[in-house]
Length: 200
Image (cartoon, rainbow, N blue to C red; front, side, top):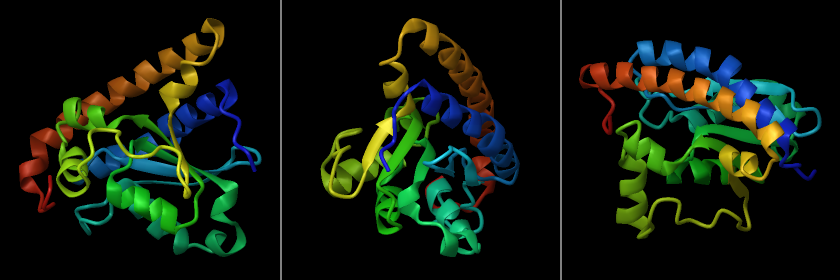
């Protein structure tokens, strides 16, 4: 099923971030985890399948996206519904491990709010970009966003195509979301030396 990249989609993804992912991430950060999270949304009606957040304090592989997939496959819904029928929402542009996990799980898409550069510059978590450069020789965002596995798009890329009257309320919500993540990032950075995450 084709995903229509329009104001309705952008609005729904922002709402899922604000109302479903962020409350989980607030709890996760309070437990020493990073600010990354994700959600699965049905393509057909944009209803939520599942939301999750980073859980690296339990296992350093449980990035927001991979932890979401772990939890999804532990539930009966994974046997009843195909990943091809879902939108994969990531709060932050996925790292190389998470991109691969999305592909291995059979998703043909992912959408993200914060870019790789945001992870480095606004969140002081540069590991994604360092791995892209050191292992794959790629610059930030230098991977193929359209490939044989999936199409990766930023929510702001969608908003940029909209007329002003549709874009403005989305940008206002996006700024509100940015503010909440900025506060969570400060909390994580202030306490990260207390956790045992290898790349904190």
